[in-house]
Each structure stands twice: as structure tokens, then as C-alpha cells.
Image 1 (cartoon, helix red, strand yellow):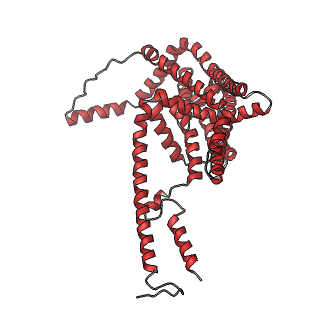
Image 2: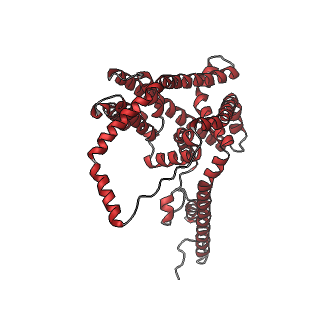
Image 3: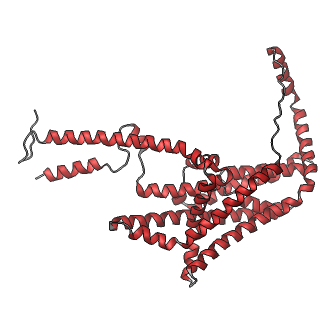
Length: 393
């Protein structure tokens, strides 16, 4: 039996302490496993709760993001001498003005193109018929394979669905209620931001907790607001380039295409892909040659490749660099819950959650599977070091 070499400690004192620490480590690992299971269950159950209660939760989350983004502007206006109520109202009005101008630039020319839509669709169909005629041998091969397999082509069943006008009529009251709730809650949150900060900082029992709360609030606000402002300026530049490019190519309504490019660029991956499809469809519908018609889409694809791989990473830097897998996961997760609005909110929510995790502690998920602690700082290791330090003469 190995005896303790440290003076003043009986030989049998060290093993009980070691057994206690081992038991505590096993208990901590069990609790960590239960926390992970609860977090996984919450992650899977949350979409159903948020989607069912979208009338309540969607305006609340949107108002929180708007509060984070517009609070710095309200602070600047308040520092300039305006009352807090007026500064909050002006910041929200400025945001609404920008959104209305962008939507007007997009939808007003689009309404005027509805008359030419049938001719565009006929020309697109003509291009596809020529393309289908070039690959008619594929259809013939498929038909022969079906005959050899003894299968007949199934009957096509068409289900009657509500028309677009009926869907718009059904959705309009809900959308109006959600928009009204969103801006009302955003206004009251922006107006009460000073009281909320004071309550979060002064109602803590320890000074360290107040300092940590202040850092978390400042970091979340700085990250989300700086990201949206920076990305908004980049997207505005993309819109200007697309406007000039479509004007140089002789396309109708260049301001519409520029505004559409700016708005869709806020949606990671899906927005630029949709823009490529729209430009391709419009080009094919207004050009006699498919090669010429596809040129606007190819030009935009090249612009997006340069912007997303070189310009945006160079401007945003390492602070806002996120894992593309996490972006796609957040995009699909919140799109599944709230549709297009969830897709717009996915990246700001991901930034806010990332800032919170950076301050509260990042879990070591991969290492936990292989026996490591869930968090980098293990309290048992700290306790063991303190005991060994105290036992050292």
C-alpha cells in the first residue's frame, strides 16, 4: 500500500478524498448528460411551440431584434438632446422609412410588368420546348424502359387548392396584427431600454454579476447591430452595382432589380439563388437567344461570388465569421418555424446566441462524448488543485 509522503497527513487520508472527487466527477457527468438531453428535447420541441404560437412569439422575437439594432441610434439621438420618447420614436420611424422605400422601389415597377408576363412566359416555354426537343431521346428511353418493365404511366390526380387571392385574403388579418404588435412592442422596448439596463445591472447581488451582465448586453448589442449595419451597407453596394449593370444591359426597371438584389442578399444562400433564378427567367422571357438571356444571371452570379468570398469576409473580419453549417442550420430551423420572416431573423438570432454562449461558457460537445468535461473549466479540477496546493508544505 502506497503511503503519503506529505508530512502531517495520515496515509489513509488521501484515498477517501480521491474517491470523493471521483464520485463528484461521475455525478457531474451524469448531470451534464441530463442537461444535454433536456437541451436536445427543447431544441426539437421548440419549433412546434413557436409555430403554433407564432402570433405571439414572432412579433416578440422580431421586436427584440429591432430593439437591439435601433437602440444605438436612439442612444445617439438622446445624447444629441432629444427626449427619450422622441428619440425612440424617430429611430423606429427611420427604420420604417428605409423599409418602405426599398419595398416601393421593388414592387412598384413589378406591378407594371404584369401586363407583359404572358408574353414572357410564352417565350420561356418556347425556349424550353427547343431544349426538350434536343433531349427527346431521354423521354423515348424512359418510355421504352417502362414498357420493358410492364408498367403503365399512372394517372395524374389534381387536388383543388385555394387560389392566390383567397390565400392573401385569409392571411392579411393575421399579418396586420403581427406587424402592429411587432412595432408596438419594439417601440416600448426601445423606449424602456434605459430602465431595463439599469434593472439588469443594479438588481444583482454581486458586483461581478453586474459587470458580467453589462458585458453580455453590450456584446450582444454590438455584434447584432454592427453586423446588420455592415451587411446592410454591403447589400446596398450590391444593389447599386446590379442597378447599373441591368441598366447597361438594357433591362427594364433597373431600380427594381437593384432593390431586389439588396433585399434578397439579406437571406444567406437562398436569397442570391432566388435572384439568379429570377434574372434567368426574365432574361429568357425577353431575349430571342437563350445564351443572351442567361447573361444577366451569370453576371450576377459572378458578382455574388466575388462579394461573398472576398468583399464580405474582408469587411466583417474574424469577429462575425460563422460556420456555414451553423448558418444553414439556423436558416432551415427558423424558416421551418416562421417561414420567410424566420429566415430573415435566423442570422441575427444566431449572432445573439453565439455572443451569449461566448460569455456564459461554450460547451465541449465533441470532447464530452469521449469523456472530457462538458465545459472547459472543470470545477473539480479547480477543487483538486486547491486541495493539492493546500496539502503541499
